[in-house]
Image (tube, rainbow, N blue to C red; front, side, top):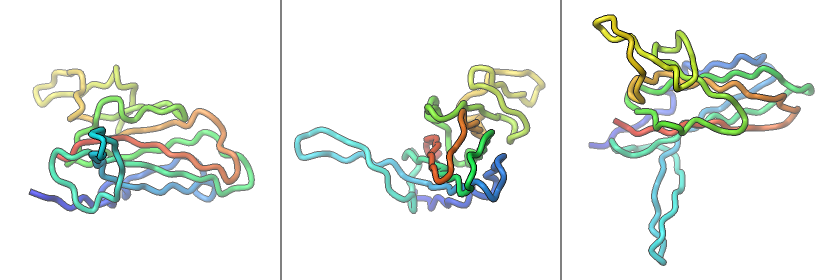
Length: 158
Protein backbone atom coordinates (compact mmCIF):
# COMPACT_ATOMS: atom_id res chain seq x y z
CA UNK A 1 0.00 0.00 0.00
CA UNK A 2 1.31 3.49 -0.87
CA UNK A 3 0.52 6.59 1.13
CA UNK A 4 0.89 10.22 0.23
CA UNK A 5 2.89 11.85 3.01
CA UNK A 6 1.90 15.46 3.40
CA UNK A 7 4.56 17.94 4.39
CA UNK A 8 1.86 19.94 6.15
CA UNK A 9 1.35 17.16 8.70
CA UNK A 10 4.04 18.58 10.94
CA UNK A 11 4.30 22.11 9.61
CA UNK A 12 1.21 23.38 11.38
CA UNK A 13 2.73 22.78 14.79
CA UNK A 14 6.27 23.96 14.00
CA UNK A 15 7.26 26.54 16.60
CA UNK A 16 10.01 29.11 16.88
CA UNK A 17 11.20 30.77 20.06
CA UNK A 18 13.27 33.44 18.27
CA UNK A 19 11.52 36.63 17.13
CA UNK A 20 9.48 35.74 14.04
CA UNK A 21 10.75 38.76 12.11
CA UNK A 22 14.38 37.72 12.63
CA UNK A 23 14.26 34.04 11.79
CA UNK A 24 12.59 32.19 8.97
CA UNK A 25 12.24 28.40 9.08
CA UNK A 26 11.06 26.13 6.31
CA UNK A 27 10.22 22.47 6.74
CA UNK A 28 11.18 19.95 4.09
CA UNK A 29 10.01 16.35 3.98
CA UNK A 30 12.29 14.06 2.00
CA UNK A 31 12.36 10.36 1.21
CA UNK A 32 15.62 8.44 1.58
CA UNK A 33 16.35 6.38 -1.54
CA UNK A 34 19.14 3.79 -1.75
CA UNK A 35 20.80 3.84 -5.17
CA UNK A 36 22.69 0.81 -6.52
CA UNK A 37 25.84 1.92 -8.35
CA UNK A 38 27.21 0.12 -11.43
CA UNK A 39 30.20 -1.08 -9.38
CA UNK A 40 27.92 -2.80 -6.85
CA UNK A 41 28.16 -0.20 -4.07
CA UNK A 42 25.17 1.70 -2.76
CA UNK A 43 24.61 5.32 -1.82
CA UNK A 44 21.72 7.31 -0.41
CA UNK A 45 19.98 10.24 -2.00
CA UNK A 46 17.07 12.33 -0.81
CA UNK A 47 14.08 13.30 -2.94
CA UNK A 48 10.80 15.06 -2.19
CA UNK A 49 8.51 12.73 -0.25
CA UNK A 50 5.52 12.93 -2.54
CA UNK A 51 4.71 9.24 -2.17
CA UNK A 52 6.09 7.00 0.58
CA UNK A 53 5.51 3.30 1.18
CA UNK A 54 5.28 1.92 4.73
CA UNK A 55 8.75 0.91 5.88
CA UNK A 56 10.51 3.62 3.85
CA UNK A 57 12.67 6.25 5.55
CA UNK A 58 11.65 9.89 5.56
CA UNK A 59 13.66 12.91 6.68
CA UNK A 60 12.00 15.89 8.32
CA UNK A 61 14.35 18.84 7.89
CA UNK A 62 14.13 22.41 9.14
CA UNK A 63 16.13 24.94 7.17
CA UNK A 64 16.41 28.25 9.00
CA UNK A 65 17.83 31.65 8.10
CA UNK A 66 18.52 34.81 10.10
CA UNK A 67 16.99 37.61 8.02
CA UNK A 68 17.79 40.29 10.59
CA UNK A 69 20.74 42.69 10.60
CA UNK A 70 21.72 41.49 14.10
CA UNK A 71 22.71 38.06 15.38
CA UNK A 72 19.87 35.95 16.78
CA UNK A 73 20.36 34.11 20.07
CA UNK A 74 18.36 31.53 22.01
CA UNK A 75 16.84 29.85 18.97
CA UNK A 76 14.53 26.98 19.87
CA UNK A 77 12.80 24.98 17.12
CA UNK A 78 10.19 22.30 17.77
CA UNK A 79 8.83 19.84 15.23
CA UNK A 80 6.23 17.14 15.86
CA UNK A 81 6.83 13.57 14.75
CA UNK A 82 3.74 12.68 12.71
CA UNK A 83 1.70 9.79 14.13
CA UNK A 84 2.31 7.74 10.98
CA UNK A 85 6.11 8.05 11.41
CA UNK A 86 8.33 6.15 13.87
CA UNK A 87 11.35 8.21 14.97
CA UNK A 88 14.73 6.57 14.15
CA UNK A 89 16.90 6.49 17.29
CA UNK A 90 19.85 8.90 17.23
CA UNK A 91 18.84 10.62 14.00
CA UNK A 92 18.22 14.11 15.44
CA UNK A 93 21.70 14.72 16.81
CA UNK A 94 23.93 17.36 15.22
CA UNK A 95 26.71 19.77 16.08
CA UNK A 96 24.56 22.93 15.89
CA UNK A 97 22.27 22.27 18.81
CA UNK A 98 21.20 20.26 21.79
CA UNK A 99 18.22 17.98 21.25
CA UNK A 100 15.34 17.11 23.56
CA UNK A 101 12.28 14.94 23.06
CA UNK A 102 8.66 14.76 24.14
CA UNK A 103 6.45 11.72 24.61
CA UNK A 104 3.41 13.68 25.81
CA UNK A 105 2.40 15.67 22.75
CA UNK A 106 4.92 18.46 23.33
CA UNK A 107 3.87 19.19 26.92
CA UNK A 108 7.35 18.52 28.33
CA UNK A 109 10.82 17.88 26.92
CA UNK A 110 13.90 16.09 28.21
CA UNK A 111 17.05 14.39 26.97
CA UNK A 112 16.41 11.08 25.22
CA UNK A 113 17.86 8.96 28.01
CA UNK A 114 15.43 10.49 30.53
CA UNK A 115 12.32 10.35 28.35
CA UNK A 116 9.45 8.45 29.91
CA UNK A 117 5.80 7.75 29.19
CA UNK A 118 2.86 7.25 31.53
CA UNK A 119 1.03 4.05 30.63
CA UNK A 120 -2.78 3.72 30.77
CA UNK A 121 -2.49 1.81 34.06
CA UNK A 122 -0.53 4.71 35.62
CA UNK A 123 2.93 3.12 35.47
CA UNK A 124 5.77 5.26 34.13
CA UNK A 125 8.10 3.47 31.72
CA UNK A 126 11.04 4.44 29.53
CA UNK A 127 9.75 5.90 26.26
CA UNK A 128 10.40 3.92 23.09
CA UNK A 129 10.91 5.38 19.62
CA UNK A 130 7.20 4.70 19.03
CA UNK A 131 6.37 7.08 21.91
CA UNK A 132 8.28 10.14 20.65
CA UNK A 133 5.82 12.85 19.62
CA UNK A 134 8.10 15.92 19.24
CA UNK A 135 11.74 16.87 18.73
CA UNK A 136 13.08 20.17 20.10
CA UNK A 137 16.41 21.71 19.12
CA UNK A 138 18.14 24.51 21.05
CA UNK A 139 20.73 26.15 18.81
CA UNK A 140 23.93 26.41 20.83
CA UNK A 141 25.29 29.68 19.43
CA UNK A 142 24.32 32.98 17.84
CA UNK A 143 23.14 32.82 14.25
CA UNK A 144 24.69 35.68 12.32
CA UNK A 145 22.81 37.90 9.82
CA UNK A 146 22.21 36.00 6.59
CA UNK A 147 23.41 32.72 8.08
CA UNK A 148 21.46 29.53 7.46
CA UNK A 149 21.36 26.21 9.25
CA UNK A 150 19.62 22.87 8.98
CA UNK A 151 18.25 20.51 11.63
CA UNK A 152 16.59 17.17 10.94
CA UNK A 153 15.38 13.84 12.15
CA UNK A 154 14.73 10.61 10.30
CA UNK A 155 11.78 8.30 10.68
CA UNK A 156 10.14 5.25 9.15
CA UNK A 157 6.64 5.37 7.74
CA UNK A 158 4.52 2.91 9.72
